[in-house]
Image (cartoon, rainbow, N blue to C red; front, side, top):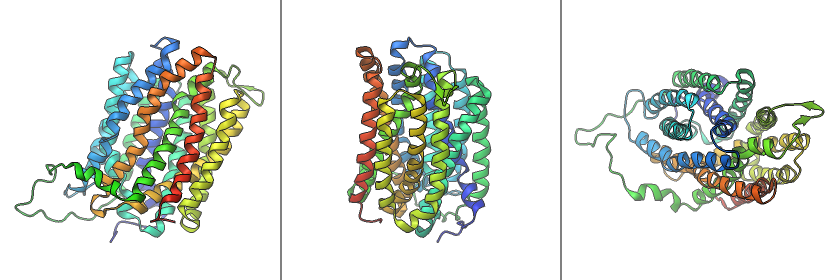
Length: 418
């Protein structure tokens, strides 16, 4: 029984508000913090330094969402199982963003980034169970599509904030304020069923026994393993692009002109490319919200894999911004459809209803774990660029193309969803 679910726009948008700001936050960081790092690190080492910061946060994120989700599965309060974690995590996240805005050394940035990652996990680990908890299976494609659309619209807003405010400190301040506003909206809309009363001899909800088996149990399901691995590969490919695109435009694409219009700074080029991906992706998500429940998750994902992989080849080989912009348009459409189908697919294959948030947290680790690898790839990117101008970037983006295709084709192995 899911008494709080309403198949109405205000419910989808209200409960998805925190999903929106989570995307906004990380998109701003991945686009602008490499430039913040470059201000305090010598040019030839900036990719490695930025990659190491991401890798440090990713190590924590490999277990953080699952731990918080696991705790929320066992929490019983008048506010529900998930909502207290969202409230606390959102508040800490805004504090972390303010600290990042003041960071003026590599060590300070690394500490503030790790604090942000931990705070984010407190909120989003339990929050990730939203679709499974409250959305019926025959509406999951629609819910997933709307969340994906909000995620991509957030990236458009991130571009607007980046271009409009300019200074990194002001940008982080704006995101911190939006983070609180969106958390309040979600908490106001997202009501949970009342928790059952705790028996007298039952252990306290926040002190349950931790066992290794609870973490390995979902991987006993072959469907969960395939979905996890597929998402891992796609996330690996995505972060290879996102982490290093700002520096790629700065080092490799000498003239940032779009159909004759001079964009000026590399930051503007990165934001323009991000804008077209997000706009076209939002369109793709909107279309997919209506189609994924009908044509199936696996067919949608396989088709998107071929399109995204093909689009990345000219991106890697042709350092011309107009070409990059056109390729980004095609990539964004396919990526928007992919996101819509992938969230619904994950909810379809969760093995245990009693551990939904924990298992979704483990699934989320398929997104954070690749950041460890893509972070360390920064050292290889620097090494490749030293041997031949731009070689490191070309190598990274071609690997990204292969990862997208492989990850999307693997979903054919899933049996519990169509």
